[in-house]
Length: 171
Ligand SMILES: CC(C)(COP(=O)(O)OP(=O)(O)OC[C@H]1O[C@@H](n2cnc3c(N)ncnc32)[C@H](O)[C@@H]1OP(=O)(O)O)[C@@H](O)C(=O)NCCC(=O)NCCS
Image 1 (cartoon, helix red, strand yellow):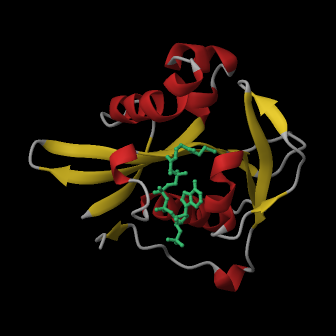
Image 2 (tube, protein in one colour; image 1 turned 90 degrees about the horizontal axis):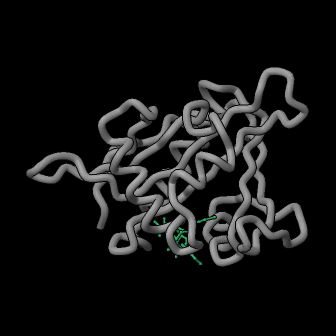
């Protein structure tokens, strides 16, 4: 059984989240977690962290993660920003990434009442977001030396917001 959990940086699973992000997202572009923290001071603590966890006999294992940064009270941008979406390379293409995004959208559009979400998607990941209804709304730009496009999704009509299933079996 895989569960999606929402944690913060003080949670015991945060270390595993950081390890996964370092392996899958940061190290391949020559960054450490310390570099990431320096680039955006305070962002980690202000973000909500979502982890997909598997019950291993020796304890919970984080297989995927994503973060959600809510807009500042007086910021012009009213949408939440989704970042650091990644899944353990040995468990990609099993639906874990999609389940993480379902949980983030449910949180953002349900309890938090945000009008939309956006992300800076690496070009290789654009089809992943498009499959769940996100759309590109920028030209290509460079971030950390990697080509990205901005993608976004608007909140659905209130009646369409479903309670997500946060525990699931993978086929
Ligand atoms: C991108 C990523 C988060 C997707 O997570 P995942 O668990 O592998 O994706 P899922 O299994 O939930 O895939 C959902 C759908 O998107 C598709 N998909 C996933 N990654 C894709 C990709 N790179 N290109 C095309 N389609 C992709 C899957 O085939 C699946 O389609 P289906 O429903 O028709 O079968 C994961 O592959 C990953 O960590 N990649 C490396 C890091 C990365 O690029 N992160 C994004 C940074 S913006």
